[in-house]
Structure formats: structure tokens, C-alpha cells
Length: 110
Ligand code: 5GP
Image (cartoon, rainbow, N blue to C red; front, side, top):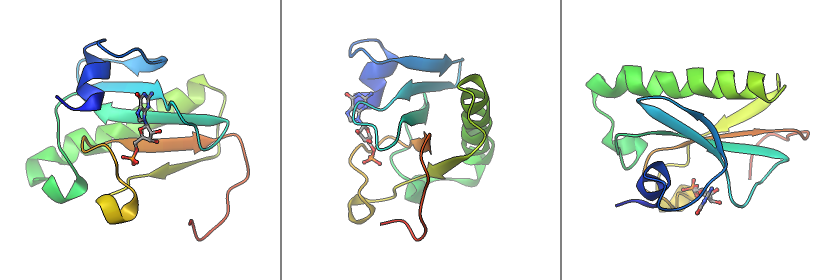
């Protein structure tokens, strides 16, 4: 079981921001911004490299959840990030969209 499956199963507590049949959104335990939410599909896809064409709708839906959660939290400006692979700092191999808000952001990212 991935760490995020354990959060989905409520075996590990998390501050939940949104849930439906396909997705869970919860606040990151080590936030990199005042608002830092992770949006995960309940079905495990390890990384972006594992995506199949049939996953397109599921992955697109991550952004709709992000938009909804940011609206709920009163945020209109935010950054979305997928880390893909250890070299890009992915540490949990269960696809997740980082959504960060509440501070100025710089570009390029580190
Ligand atoms: P990654 O590094 O894989 O892109 O992102 C994993 C994220 O999961 C990190 O930002 C990390 O802080 C977060 N995280 C790790 N363990 C937990 C946990 O037990 N609970 C929550 N809410 N977030 C976690």
C-alpha cells in the first residue's frame, strides 16, 4: 500500500480538503507554502511515466479538484506541480498534484 492509499483508507490521519469517488485532496504534512494541498487519484498510478491514454480524464480531473479546493480556500493564484521520478524529488510513488498558494512564487522553480 502506498502512503497515500493509507491516507485514503484513513489508516494515517490527514487534513482532508476534498473527497469524492475518484479523488482525495489533503493538506501536505510539510507545507512548502502557506497553502499546500496534494490532490491524488484514489486509483494508484505510480508516476507520470506510467500514464496510459485511458488515464487522460482521470489526470485532467486532478486540475478540476485543484481549482475547486483553491476556490474553497479563497485562493485565485497558485502553482501546480507534478514531481516525476526521484531526480525530480518525487518521494511518494502514487501520482499526486501539488497545489501551492499563499505566497509569491519565483520562476524558474528550484
Ligand atoms: P513528492 O515529493 O513525492 O512530490 O511529494 C510527496 C509529498 O507528500 C511531500 O510534499 C510530503 O511533505 C508529503 N507527505 C509525506 N508524508 C506525508 C504524510 O504522512 N501526510 C501528508 N499529509 N503529507 C505527507
